[in-house]
Length: 247
Image (tube, rainbow, N blue to C red; front, side):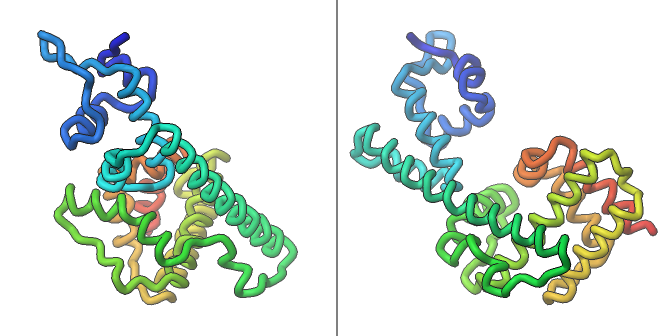
């Protein structure tokens, strides 16, 4: 049985635009083209798409995925490899969740966590490079901007990641709770976030932050990340940042 690109999109929740892009870069070729020029996919192509999605969940870039799938390896071998990688990721995420829960409990009772406990489960340099690869590829392909990770400070990256997760989680919670973007509690969250960035050598003014939020709202990559965390978060963040900058 053959499937049109629309049917494959419906089955996999991958957009038609993305499927066209996968075809263009040679990552997922249709089994054949109809006389009318329609892309048609068979079982083998659906299985390859599944493998692509597994690798995407593991934060591999499209270039890396193509290299991995073009190896002379049977599907069973690829699936076994992906199972191991996903189990490792699940284990690391579980550890990070434990660190987050410990942080919340410590904050609630007014305790200070041991410094080494603050970063339990966060990535090392190699993992950061892998995690940032997709963003590097996107920025280069879309904006011709090269994100330099050669001199990354892993401890600083972990600290920034922890702060970003905490801030975005708090903002998402405020959105879900129905707190207006102009509320003082939201302003305090932004104020504390900017204070963290500034004290760590990354001067960011309220207007800089508002400009960044607007960029996230207009850029598909960053919009997808924010909306994936909580529907409406990108719009809420932008409105809150602009209100904060206008105070």
